[in-house]
Length: 401
Ligand SMILES: [Mn+2]
Image (cartoon, rainbow, N blue to C red; front, top):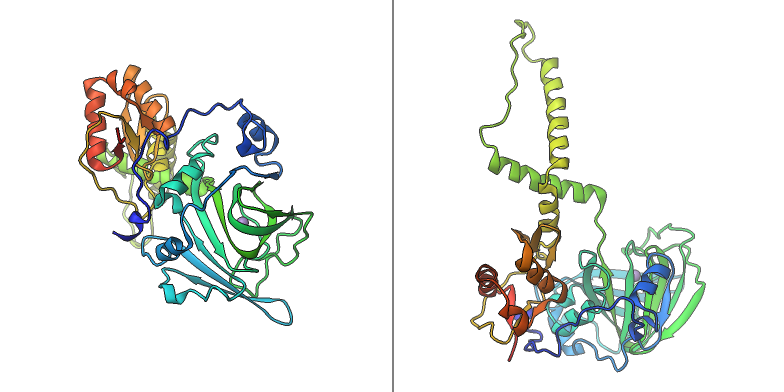
């Protein structure tokens, strides 16, 4: 099954995640605590952290990355740059790429980008999980870029926060405040017309650079290198509202068939222009929309729709159940999304009401992505039944004993 097998490592107690202490200084953030980092840097200013990941290894080898870029299930892009006498010429192609479609390693100035590496490679998932001091509703994916010497994607800005982790070789980053968002119109990439760097660093393996949204940056490989980007997602107002409305409409249809109020026109007079839309029908349409929007927005179902939307699996993800017992504990499959609110738990686009001890257990699973033997021992028969279903679905994996 191709990409999903890029790396399969049994889950053990060592590679599951401990609870996060937001007030403890961590080398990941250059000696800041997560709480301090969020206050001082998040959305505000860049931070360079030397040796955030000491002794880091790329989450996968170059050969495995190139193989992954050949898979249909993976989103990949190839960016090539040819230096001409006046400015650089850029080309962009979308994968999948057969190995022979990639440029030779000796050729300068090319970059292969693979999105969503965390879905395919356990080590990439674990790297992304280091950033779970930010709500998982905001975590998007781990992208990896392989660049030959001189490779980069040009000076640009992103709309989201990003942590750039150097995992192999060296890359020179130049960053600056975005003074002029104008983009070049002669290239197939979003490249700034007028990039002004304020700071410049060469990142070595293990070093990391945090950039807030809309900071201009340009990273150029010094020799072959690999860089991982921990990326975030931010809901757009229109996109989120549209998604929630669609989900609320579906609920509405399920539950209120036949209960809909119909347009009535006892005052309708005979018409000599039957093609004209009656003004009363226009009024009815407008009032219906107001009524329904008001009801939808104040419905308790908004919470449920949000939880289901946020935990919807990424496109192209499907799960295979595997036989296994819960004896040694369970961990969420790396592709599983699980969240909760005060009344519900959400997993992979579905929702359950949960209260009391069961809610505590399931929230622990959502937060830590695993449940040990001890936690499972206290599970009610109902909670155990639910966990067994999730094991069957492949949403949960047994932990190796
Ligand atoms: Mn970027």
